[in-house]
Length: 458
Image 1: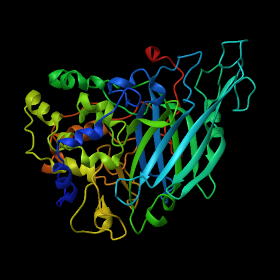
Image 2 (image 1 turned 120 degrees about the horizontal axis):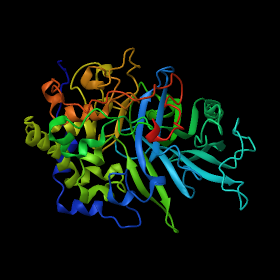
Image 3 (image 1 turned 30 degrees about the vertical axis):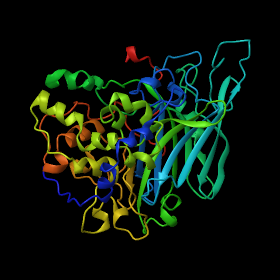
Image 4 (image 1 turned 135 degrees about the vertical axis):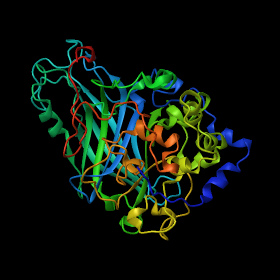
């Protein structure tokens, strides 16, 4: 297949590459704030704060709205009682939006959680009978949440008594879990909806990528490693006008999105996890930078020469050449800078064919490179989505935001091999896991219901 993506000079890249060795100081961290998606050394013991995935897309059934969805707590075994998987209290779960391209947060949607525990010292049970509603007295442990919308101008509470959909204990305990999910969806003032609760782990992939890129011969592919596991989800669907620059998507339809977790250390809140684009910390940042990267604000990304160098000269491309003989494209990789740090942009052409109109729009600020998941809200939902997104000719897919159905492992492997430069996909370069094991929903929050069957019984 042929791709037609024109490129332009990237002002910010020169700025970032010129930063001196002092840029490493930006990544300084300590044991009190270091954490990450599970790929970082310090996160393994803190799953409640472990950001696993972020999705951002124009809602397929409500094209004037945007859905933002973030997951935490990887590899939730459905049978993990008796306490199952609550959100952390005394912490803040955030979805952050930059709507003018300067890499600074303009809008934060922030969830905080509190426990209602009726068990006391009388029982170990999560529930002591069938749970048919969120207010069922048989549900002995329940969480509530507060949702705020925060801007530089102040904070507004959108929800102050939301109820979290509980962990899916099983068919006897929760005979109609879909009803509990439906009851947990909360309407927002001014339009929109929000959800917090357990969901299916919708990130489909074969994690044997870490075994020398699928055993060095692609024989270690085809098994969905996350099949059967669950995660904890926060999601919000809002009118595009709520997140666009100056409230008008027509002025500048592009937003940058990240999710983070803030943990209280006894004195103040510190960022302990960060996730924007998928797989960046897994396969771009080296081991020595992973923990610190997750405490870094995107506005500092362009100052970190060590990080920019990992994008312009990626390790994965060199591994593909060494192991599979797929010739690595010449460096510096400006194509990957566009994918991960600036957004793909055409020098000429209509906005609807341009995935990063920030650099062309007079209402936006000066574009500053930063690792964010960028979404052009002016591109309507695809009638027939292609799992390879932009590389598959579907401009509504990753790296233009991220839909639940986007095959980000295959997309990023192909991008590392140079598909966005050559316009051609590399035959056979795939983990052979093309879709989730459960179908996605047609309405908000779209992510499938959580499993209640042990992983080893599926």
